[in-house]
Structure formats: C-alpha cells, structure tokens
Image (cartoon, rainbow, N blue to C red; front, side, top):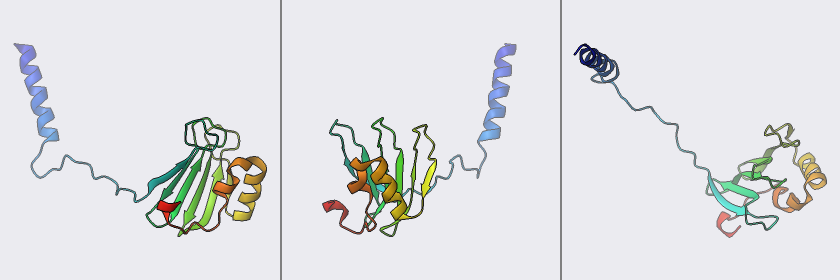
Length: 134
C-alpha cells in the first residue's frame, strides 16, 4: 500500500510539473528548407548515386558528390542565385571537409586534377537552367 501511495504521489508531481494550463507541450520546429533533391547521377554505373543536385525550384543550390564511391559525400559545392559561391572537399576521406574553395577557377583546377570523372558535372559556373530538363 505504501508503494502505491508513493507511485501516485510521483505521478501527480510529474503531471503537475509537465501539464499546466496555458503551457504548450510542443517544441517550435525550424522552418522547413525549401531545398529539395532534384537529380542524382550514378557516375560509375554501380547502381548507387554518386552526385546529388539540390535546388530551390529555380536554381541548383547545392551539389554533393561521392568521389571515392564509399557512399558518403566528400565534395560539396554551394551556389547562390545560380552562381558558384564556394566548395569544400574531404580530401583524406575522414568525414571532415579540410579543403575550402571560394574561387571557381581554383576549384575547377583541383577537381580536374583530383576527380576528373566529376569535372563535367561539378565545374559549371552558371547553374541557371530548367531543373526539370537537367
């Protein structure tokens, strides 16, 4: 009987602390991103996408590429208003993007030297085109 009384007291305290009039139990969520995946490309034809293009409905906004085919992105290209903004690369494939690019020419030079299979898919400077015809 003593155990039941203790359990009821604990439940009552829990109820009073967590359910109060005028107190919202919901946590506000962050606004949903307008960015959606619009296309994937399987560069090495193994059945797994190696490049994912993301867009905002008008432009490509971000590109993620798995250049060593391990299933994890190791190059990310960021675009703003359809133009190259920056890129970053995980050059030692440890999960951390060590190499940063803010110049499209430097990125293209690095990409051509290190990942030529991806060059024609990541080196564009102008990403203004119809995403659905891409």
